[in-house]
Length: 612
Image (tube, rainbow, N blue to C red; front, side, top):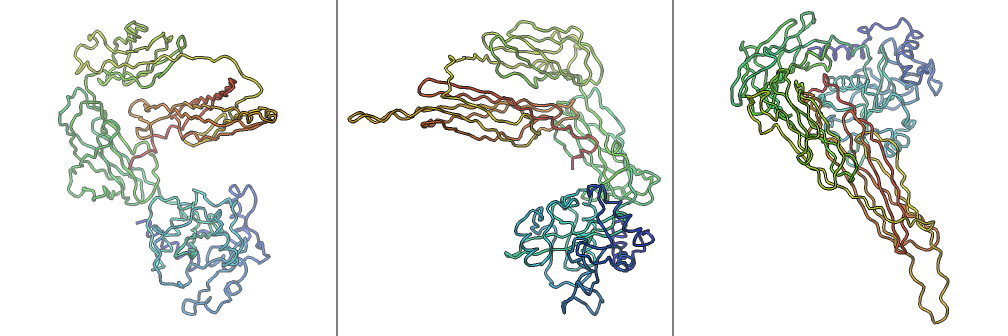
């Protein structure tokens, strides 16, 4: 389809005259336009000039013929006896890049007949930061070192140009194998010269083969060739909510997939339909109303502009809330005009209320505060008013007699911690009268236990002989490991030397250091559940350690470095509390504490988070 014609255009432009691209009128306009295209990525500065860094002039003829900026003459850059192919009249190099590297002519014949499978080859990640690659480039290739601060390296905006460059190379080089696999290739390709709107660029990858460094040079097609017509696929479920159904019921309905009528060409799409139960997606078979609308085994099917395809499907009602999820995605392009209509959902609801405790204080100081958070669910699909009751050790602490509920809502109880364990219970519709015909009342109640935490503060025996301090960042990013250091400082003067006949002097004091770091984290295997009012499963995180060591004589610093695991919550910060104390065998003590805020983890964009 488009991919094939686009690759043909690339080859034609590159090898013949570039006539498929509306080029600037002359080399001066071309340089100005190219610099304008990439100025923002080059810190506001121009990149291309009429001479390169070695003073070689730009080759205007090569720009006019091949839509690329090279400097010097091909003959000058290709002086070797094997650097000219008399059959194709091609030189090995077009000339030089702006930075003085040789500009590889990717149409020059292969020096080897070895097959190169780009996808399975072990390419070196970020080669511009790899010492072995830098040594190979400067010592073996005799070229300038790769610039580690090259602003065009690792740029996701160039990924499509890189993918097209691979496909271009594969199409005219019989020894190259490649297929798109979703890999972030911009992390592996060093950009020797960036592509612009109307000119090609050049990139290079490196790998080790049998201990020998090898490289592959690829063209980076002009950005204007990446522009394409974007489709607008949509999907619509016949029923947007299945209500008043019972577990075990088999339900049949239809779903329709459509391509926008003003799209200029046929377009392939990926059709999917799932029954989502407890966050797990179970595939549903699509039964086409027309036999020719049967998708292939991968779920792919080609649509004509304006065409709609309708399918029948059947599912079984579960004994818990669930939904039907329909999705459609373009196959040959990773864009869609409107992602919001690429999915549709239909909830499957039963006449039932239920409640779950989703977060609570595990331990609280006696006389301090504790809190419990619950999520109350209404599966009827209708707004209703009922009663919600909170109890602590059987005593009603909060009673909402007219609690309006639709979908799922959160409610929290905060209370003063008693002297013993607090059994907290939350119950929806405790009188069983609003409504009086629930499918089940067993899940209307949930409970948890908050344990008392008696804090024993030891006598203050701190002295200048023993100190402890915590060094930690104030804020860190979510789901990234971070480090903190606990330093114990001791200052015990050595005893005088023993007199003749006396025993050996006593050893230095022994120090015992205890550390704890406590926080929370989201369970990423559960994920952020849009369909469940943004529910995320929260788990406690606690790390402890103890060190026993000799203080030594004189002033000594005893640092201990720790790494806290990658944690975080979607949409809200987390506080990690670090506590440390030290005691000596002489009876002194010291303690310190610190808090670290873990920044909120961004809630993913629901429209773009498609599950494949």
